[in-house]
Image (cartoon, rainbow, N blue to C red; front, side, top):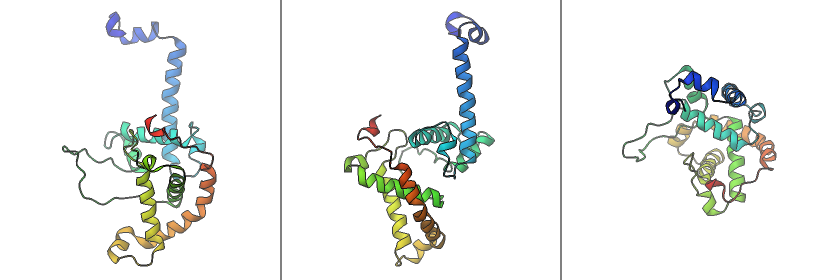
Length: 205
């Protein structure tokens, strides 16, 4: 509008935007920043959803994913906290877009693992095969990837015949301790997500 009318940015803001719209926009910016700080402070807590402005876990996950994209590493002190606390650094894009061999690093807590187990059980119980393998356009992930990760961790924790190399790689003693704590927490998580509904067309929305 500023370029079209030939006016300055300040004149356009003062004379062409309704005050109610400007107020709503400023309020949104403030609330978004407040939610960012809340998510960073309570990212490992069970009550995270309750203390933010979001009504569903899907909305909260969307917000966190957007934060990771909006705050790339080494751009600001806040960006560093976002990357470290909300999942680590995003991998650099390869020019040929091919995945290179590597080690998957997973930061686990009893709470996080209990949610992974609960989601895995829910997905296997409620989703059809094509839905399990359907890739989300935003995250580029499919439910089956989380199901497979949950199976891997459960198998490692509950199987006594684990090769020494894998045991060392997984830090198995600590993982098994977290696994036991997660199993205690999972019934509470199952109760929380029992009211959620996963639609068959969720991946296309």
